Length: 437
Image (cartoon, rainbow, N blue to C red; front, side, top):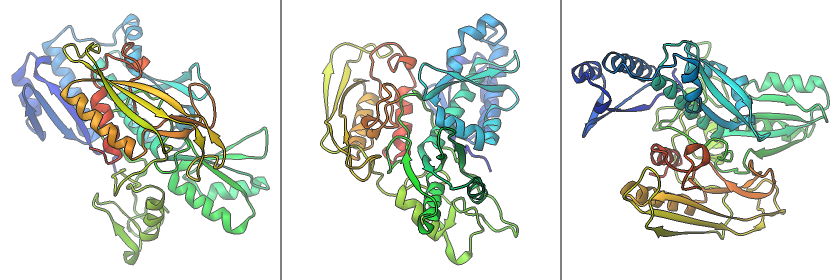
């Protein structure tokens, strides 16, 4: 089963000189046309093949198309193929999601990681293995990685356990193969990372016996959405992916993606998205987060752990943002006062440090629509959380959650500013994942 099942491509006629050839390529696909642009939806494999055919067509009709044919060209476009992500999430993906990563890159790209200025993040670069790879395809692969990263990161949780002996640790690893166990050599603690449902099962397994202690903490301090702070990853893309793959049991029975055991017919619960689970497993998963554990479809109202008492107000400027000339600027002013952490936060009873933040949107029709969506997200306490800031390194502070904001008017995507032509569509995708659209 493919883990990326819904990818959308926007294809502009202006990029092709051979319109007859373009029509011939698009004929077998389910497409919609608006103005001079086509929107094509399909699985990763389908859209990947389409990108390859479109790239070949552009090469024939537009010889000037950029290719990775020289070392100079590769250096000039390196920024298009790199992205900063949380180190903890990337470590988990390399250990537990290597097959999915191989499917994303295929034989044409390799993934390389290198340190950044922050100890909590790494830079992921997508290096082409062949000189004939086009820039269009390189960016497509990069965006697929970002989509998959977002899916994994949004459900990833970490906990610390103190097994009394190496044998107990081995037993835990055998019992929970979906989790990543990492030994801390400075003390007896072991850090465990994985899907929040599997972490919950680990907690349930440990709590009755009392033989092992555990201290669970979400990566960002958000127990409702289980999402890491958004700072290192400044870009996302459309579609949702599945971090877990369904399989068949020894007798061909459907396997629950939560407990990884065959689903009994009398205990089967099927969601509207057509994914099925054990009834008790699904009930436990929805207790932590009302989303499908396989595809991320939201069921019900998703509420975060943003501290209460904050304010969000908007003002307008007549000046334009780069890329939105002719439009004014919407300025969003956030303020979250300091307070005391509650049970939903990482360290209940301890104080947390509040923040004030400013973000910017173009005063265009789409910008105003995004503003209304952000207002809903703020009311649902999804914009901020309490945790550790990846920029300052301070604990017990209010941080951004996983809804990206432009906090600068200039500097481009790498500096959280403009121009960034895809930003409004990306943030709408992030909001849609949380049921806000």
